[in-house]
Length: 428
Ligand code: KE4
Image (cartoon, rainbow, N blue to C red; front, side, top):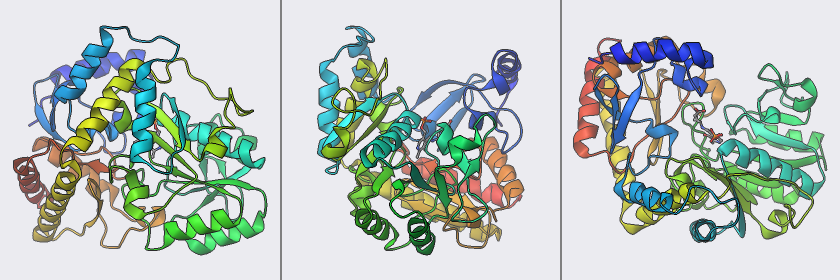
């Protein structure tokens, strides 16, 4: 049972000071009901709440904790770096090391610019693509999230060929009018949109494996199709690998699927849990960035020595052993356990997984895009979420989020999770 006394008191106070009591909306548990617990500390595959409950964590702070929480190599690197200062606002050696490491992992990156969040990375990559092509329009896909820049908070227009509409208050319609929103995995929609906007589309930005509507994967040939049609039309292909980067393979989804995008966005893992973002790719595009070129982009804390030290430690640790084989094995074991749990309980669940990213949708239909995902029974998911929490397992507090396995999750953790799921599924 997860006790809540301290968390409830903290949340009551948080509500007085912070909108919704949280610094990022998904943390408020609005999608599953109830109130969030507060975490006092985190170690390995577990978080410990302020009320002393230990939970097996499959959120992993939304992706960064691929090595588990408080990995000694990362904590040690941060402590060592902190002794030399926290921010200089002038180049520091770890920025060069990080840039070199990203290039070593991701061959499509000739040059890379650090920033402070995935939002900044994606916003800047789109501005850069627009400056490079001198075109204004760009395509994104339903269910893909690229941070909260105005022109990205846009939902699909009435038809696949019409421009998007704001998906948030405060975003002027004008800011959405260059954004085309198409269904994921739909080749014809992309062909039609490019034909209808010939010579006017600067970029296509995509999560190669979308993890912000649960998890679904590209159909065979889909990414190859996007690579070809963008090359044929002078359109910059941007892979948003903020979540998939350095997770689905050392070189991210682009390594796993063998695609070379023009630009890529990164975040999460390369900060080792500290604030970070990065975008990089073809030198001829990246060199359009200030101070070399006319596309402006900047950041006080970009390349911050603490975030660099944490990210460098994370990347070096990931390369040191057999992390990716371990992540694949743990992901597969979790998938098998959760599938068995649903089957034994007679609960229809579509389980999607790619490496160490996963999502169980409460539907008996396949899920290949957002429209499919919307068929999931969200009330049943909410009951499952709270049931698992009671059993000591913390899943993402929304049907439309991905879960993450880390190298810190042991076979015993996976087995305990499967047992909990078997018990909870019977109550749904
Ligand atoms: P941030 O600005 O939150 O660092 O990154 C935005 C972003 C960009 N691209 C992808 C593929 C992302 O997954 C994200 C952020 N992911 C969410 C998780 N669904 C962050 C969690 C949150 O918003 O609190």
